[in-house]
Image (cartoon, rainbow, N blue to C red):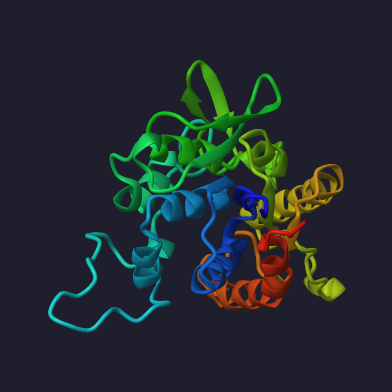
Length: 284
């Protein structure tokens, strides 16, 4: 009798606007009939992972204009929120502790995750954040999902830290850019990881200087994430690594980065034969 299939976890790493590639990875897996038993995300990976776990991924594709809406008398439900392109015009809200108040992040995703608790998700999910004072990764699996996601994606200098259970939490990418260890700790038997922190494409010397403090901070943060991701993969490698080509996309380029969802789709599609072999139980 063949052994039971392993518990499959999908790990979605940090990486800012390069998270577009995660969307393509998820699309390819779902279209192939592969649905994870567990989803673990850090930063942008937590945002998209939560939406997938809440069974609202199709609505996200509709909102982004990636998927055509279903035709018929009962069209797919529409979210009562602005189109994603409109958010590039949001004014910068200078606030104590961050250039942009975390409330803007909550505004952007509240209609996807409004009033949802971890216990109501269609798929088990965990968001990974960083404890600022203890300097350690924190795995969040209880309470309001939106609050956990806000903590996991609170990029230092851009978003305010989030206080949960007496802890002051920041972006999970600081301590767990690819939270494979956290997925295994939650019982994963086979870990699929999507890493979107591929090295930046080098530019000509005369254009190397970032324009402005925000661009400089973003490029510095990217450097840190790339190095931390490389270390994480050496320390705790996944069973299957999907690594879309994201080096040409700026950390904060949420508009221009839309093309990356195609890159993510292609990278995941190329990995499907290997994944199917892993998912096929071995006979004695």
